[in-house]
Image 1 (spheres, one colour):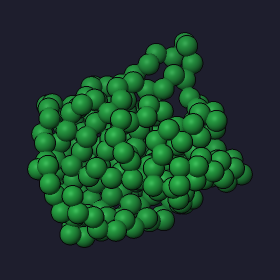
Image 2 (cartoon, one colour):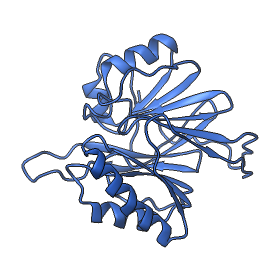
Image 3 (cartoon, helix red, strand yellow):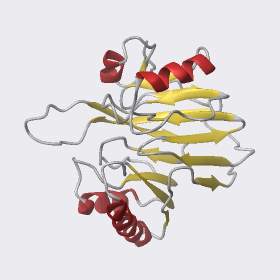
Length: 233
């Protein structure tokens, strides 16, 4: 199944605020109007405690730290017919699940969530390791997460989920990415490959980069939430 340019209305009012809850590694949950969007529930993240009212799941790519059969089984059992979006590589890897295949430039709507997809390719880990599909996602025109990619989107970003560490990234590259996106707010993800000392160091470096554009960085730990105020469009 594929999603192609399913556009939301051009003018929308967000009557309530949004909440982002960071979980382990690259998993986070966005809540609005009583519905949830789960992003990259992977193998570094324990079973999610609250799976009620899940409208959709976004999987940025096929690596096991960004998705797992166990998570998808539990989410689908609690939310029959839930929409799961991912690139072609995810659809192939998660063949026992119904994945709505998306590509850069596609848009989709699920419950109160409007999704725009970016990118296309995972960042290079090493010349001997083949590149794979990867999508970035812009959620409700406010929150951007690039998956395992440092490609800067060509849209304004209010909140950035920024990588703290990865086999495919030096911290200088992560800082350049945060400066290039220039978000108003940011929090760190993809910390599962770092020691506690390394996580704190990367928080400090990303905070500096975000502050260069006048933004605020939040060093969220697993279970912490960031509240977004309502906005009119």
